Length: 87
Image 1: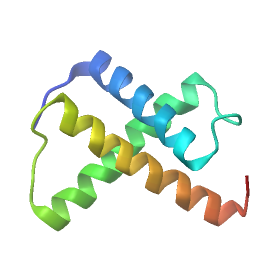
Image 2: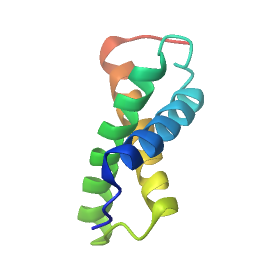
Image 3: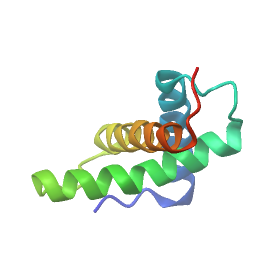
């Protein structure tokens, strides 16, 4: 497992959460802190999904970013589906 450290998770999570919110059209409702939280939780979700489907582990900063981005988009899609919000 890739050891990013606290600062690494904040940076990658923030970027992934921000780009994920741009993809899902929720950027105007979210601030910096929520983007970071979405990215970190998205990293956990993405890591779980990729680990179950492909039996892989994180292999670097870029793979970790893509994993966080995938999880962020999935998380935001689920939140939009449950709350019924539209953009």
